[in-house]
Amino acid sequence: MLGTVSVKLSPVRFERTRKDPPVATDHFPIEAGHIMLFARSIGDDNPIYHDADAATDTEPGHVIPPPTFVQASAQFTDGYVLRPVVGEPWFGSGKEPTGVKRESSGGSGGTGFHAEQHYEYHAPIQPGDVLKAVDKPGNSWSREGRRGGTLKFNESITEYYNQDGVLVVTARSVGVQTSRVVE
Image (cartoon, rainbow, N blue to C red; front, side):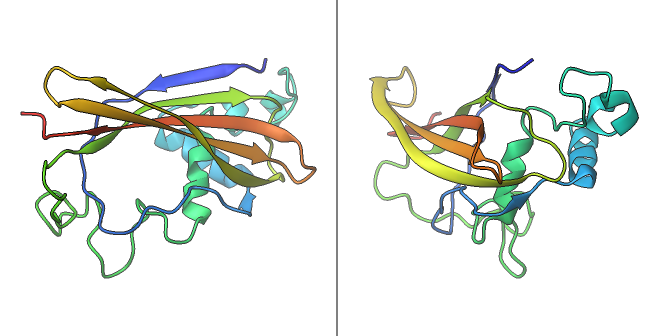
């Protein structure tokens, strides 16, 4: 069954030291081993993610990736800000107290975080597919928060097309920028 998966994430605060390029990539190969490892990394042992024989009795009839799998496309994007770079501190590296050397945020000291992620599946993805991701701007809006001042919301949309040009997934991400540090 195709449909929509929505995931609400806990805020994670970090400062970026590199310019954040788009997530889009022209070449995201879907391999059975990558699907299996991704499913294991999120603790999901559903056989549809790794057992071709078991998957033949399911609606898609083949191995498919978990709903959030397309986020792995970032590993195929050169310069992606959350991908570790040899010799540079990165978020979570431990090289600096927060993992990334803090730079002046210019004035108010607000922070940004990832707030929501939504996935809409239009067609099944399977091993052997090669996806192309296309970034598109989404909506922007703001509202007053209780502790962080003005909250600026920015939506980004990434569409994933398979090698036949068929739209298979639309991923919608919402980020939030606060006007001041939340105490």
